[in-house]
Length: 265
Image 1 (cartoon, rainbow, N blue to C red):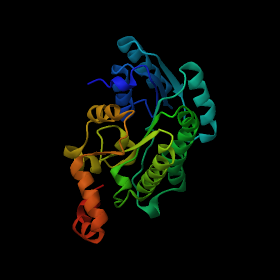
Image 2 (cartoon, rainbow, N blue to C red):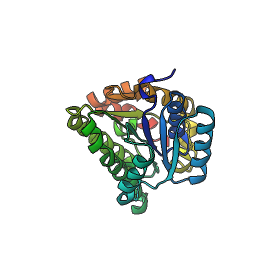
Image 3 (cartoon, rainbow, N blue to C red):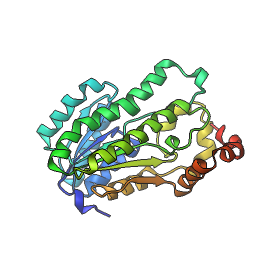
Image 4 (tube, helix red, strand yellow):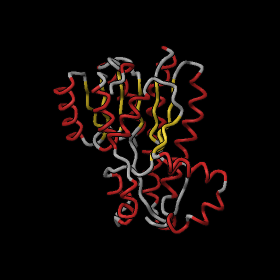
């Protein structure tokens, strides 16, 4: 189903070269939005750009960007505004995780996750907020995670980055609401993408939770349907979010009962 609110609007998606970001791009294009696709993989970005332009007849630009190089982000966003115009929606989707026990996690991996998942996201957001506030419209959508609500063994660093994203998102939502700008956090459980190729080198986690994994195209449609609406959160799947609420109320019980399951990664 198309979202008529975003027809002709300019939408920026980070981490758009595959997985959820790619599916969000296709869903936006079906609704007639113009797109700026950002990721490191230039070849994949250009292939997606060409497909979108041919099939949907919308404007689409592809920019090779590593969001961990956050000092360069303002310049790239100025380039987008020159080519497309002012940005109406920003989807901060770029991110990755590595599952390791804290004592085994390298500082390179730790700083890498924080640079991409947190600092890069904040830098992209800072690049669009002034214009959105000035025109009193716009939407920032931050892809967080259920891991930001429930931290489990071997995902401590990744969960810490997503906790940071949720904290930032909740604060930003209140700051910009007086200017007519919307802010939404998306908190998915495991998604059937190549995320776990990096995060879980053993492959055991995928085997254990395969039947629970979300399909990226369906989640993308939910996200796009929420664009330019005052939606606070998107949580998927619903039962996992119910678990996070229960954890908030009864953390000791959940940790005791769920301990065996939490270690299955």
